[in-house]
Amino acid sequence: MTTPLVTSTWLNTNFGDPNLIILDASLKENQSSLKTDLENLQIRNARFFDIKDTFSDTTNPLPNTLPSPEKFEFEAQKLGINKNSKIVIYDHLGIYSSPRAWWMLKTMGHENVAVLDGGLPDWIKEGFFIEEKKSNPTYTKGNFKAQFISAYVKNKEQILKNIQTEVALLIDARAENRFHGIGDEPRRGLRNGHIPGSINIPYTRLLQDGKFLSKEALLKILPLNEKPLFFTCGSGVTACIDLLAYELISKNPKSIYDGSWTEWGQLENLPIEK
Image (tube, rainbow, N blue to C red; front, side, top):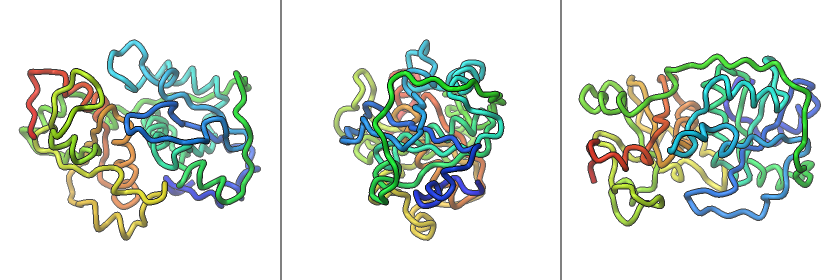
């Protein structure tokens, strides 16, 4: 695949490819309070990519953080993913958690991966095959090998340093009210506001009807320069939506601050703005 985004028509046309693996990266719950009635349905033959409980570091008190490469490799092999797999990822909200799974696979060195634009709702709208989710399916073990790309991930120390150096542009994907510290954070115990020097591009501005805006529309919204791009949000999920939008229009180096506001907002020694 030559693009990070594919259509339902493309996926249906390539459905019979023996190297194709379809991953359902839907979250059971989300901090944006988005609802769906599709939680028990999946694209035919899809495999569940469990971001919350399997493909996260569950020993970390922060939610959704990357697991170790060894853990990721083990779980990816259990899903039957191979080195030569062509992977398409979707979620049942259209575009929400699927970019996170896409970024994780890219970070672990797998290049041949794309997100289904419009996700399960668009697939159903187009009239393509669906089925009820299966309980505890098993797959032939794959030969996936994780090759961790550390440049795709930033920690709080690197974000703190960037406040002084301004080497990279830091983009916050949260809603505007949260960015400006208006109202309570959805997670308890967090301060209100944003990381100094960051700019706010709510992920919702980049989507329409569960799909990414056109490249032309994205170019009108997303500021471009030569700097590397760092992305943050509440817990590292919707930041990946902004990152993928930029991937559609620019070649700037891109990284996710994996701790995001859940980490930054609880540490009193880190600076904030409102």
